[in-house]
Image: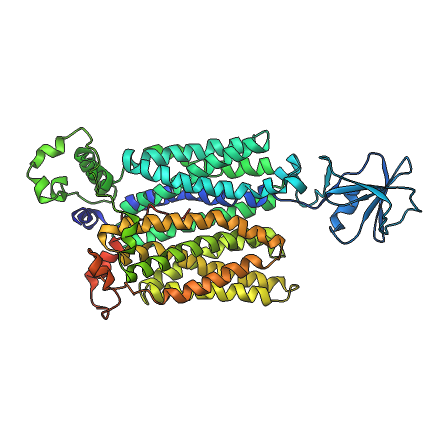
Length: 576
C-alpha cells in the first residue's frame, strides 16, 4: 500500500508511536476490569433463611451458638437441619430457602422433625459476612427464587459488549477514532461510578449494560488506532499485545477484590483507577490512515511533520506522494482542501460469499468454530477460576497473569512454525488440560489450578492468533466480511460463557467438560486448514481456494509482509 511509505520515512515504532501506543493501551486495562468485575460484584456468601426474632440458641450438629451469624461460617446446605429456639419456647428448622415451625416439639435436638409447618422465606435472610462483607446479592437478597437475577448480570453485560462493538465500530469509521475513544473513555468513568451508586437491581443492570457497550466500543476502536500508527514490521506484536493490557485489568480486579469486600466501594475504585487517561486522551491525534481516507490532506501533512519532529527526523514525505496516481493529478490543490469528503461507498457482499464452494464452506465453519471456542474458553477459564478451590483471588490473578507469556509465545511461534501449527496445538492443549482437571482428585487444589492456568494459556494464545489467521485465509473481496462474521460468532461465545460457568451448580466440572470436548474437536479440525505463513495475501476466491494445494515458498518475504498487512484494517473486530 502507498500509505505504508509513512513508516519507512518516520519509523515503524519510534517515540511518537510508542507514547501513543502505551497511552491508548493503558485504558484497555479498564475494559478488562469491567468485563470481569462481576466475579466479585455478585458473590453469593453462605446464607440461611432468617428465623423469628429473639433467637436464644442455635444448634447445628454437635455445635451450639447464640446467633445464626456465629454458626454460618461452618453451615453447609443439605448436610442437616439448623435448629433454633426462641425466647417464647418455639423451635424452628431453618434451611437456605425455607423455615419450619416444629409442632409440639420434643426436647431441643438437631434431628429431623416431620411434624412441622414449612413456609418459604419472605425476604429475610442471614448471610455469612466473614468473607464477603457486602455484595449486590446481600443488598438485594438475590437468592432462592431471585438467584437467577444474580446470574443474569454477566450475560446481560456480554450482550452489551456485542451491541457496543457493532455501534461504536461503525461510528469510528464515520466520525473518527479519537472522538469515539474520548467518548467511550469518559462514559466508562461516569457509568462505572454510577453503577456503584445504583439504588436497585434493575438500575444496576441497565447501567452495567451501557457500561458494557462503551467498554466494548473502546476496546474495538483502540485496535484500529494502534494498528494504524504502527508500521508493518511491528504490527503483529503491537496488535496482539494490546490484549496484554486487558489481562492486567483482570489482575487489578483480583487484587481489588481481595482488598475491598464492599461491592460499591470496590466498583468505585475499579472505575477510577484508569481515570488519569481522561487528562490526556483529548490530545490524541487522528490516525494518518483515517485523515487520508477522508480527504483531510492538510491535517495529514501536519501530523506527518509532527511525528517526524517528535521522532527526531526530518519529514521529507509529502501527502501528494501518498496518493494514488489518479488522485495525484490534482497536485497541491488537494493539500489545501479543508472540507472532509464522505467515505467512499463499498460494494456490499453477502455472508453467503464465505460459502461459495465446499472447500470454502468447510474452511468458514472451522474458522467460526475457532472464534467461538476461543471466546467461550477464554471467559469460562476466567470466570470459572474462582470455583476451583484454594484462594479465589489468587486464582483470578493467575488467570490474568498467564496471558502475558501466552502472547509472547504466540508472537514467536506464529512467525516461525506457522499459524496452523501454533493454533491447532494450542486448542488441543486446552482440551487436554480440561480433561485432566476432571480426573484430578478433588482434594488436590494446586494441581487443578495449575491445569486451569495451562488451559487459559493455550486458549488465550489461539484466541489472539485467530484475528490475523482469518485475514490471511480469505481473499481481499471478502476479508472484512470474514473477520466481521467471525467476530460476531466470538461474541456469541462470550454471551454463552456465563451460562456455561453456571452449569457448575449441577456438576463442578461440567464447564470444563464442555470446553475440553469442543477445544479438542476444533483443534483437530484446525489441522485441516491451509498454512498461510510465507504466503502473499490472496485477492480472488480462486487464489484463496488454492491455499494449501501447493508447497509454501518460505523465501517469499514479500508475501509474509503482505500477510501481516492484512491485519491493518481488520483488527477493529476485536475480542469482546
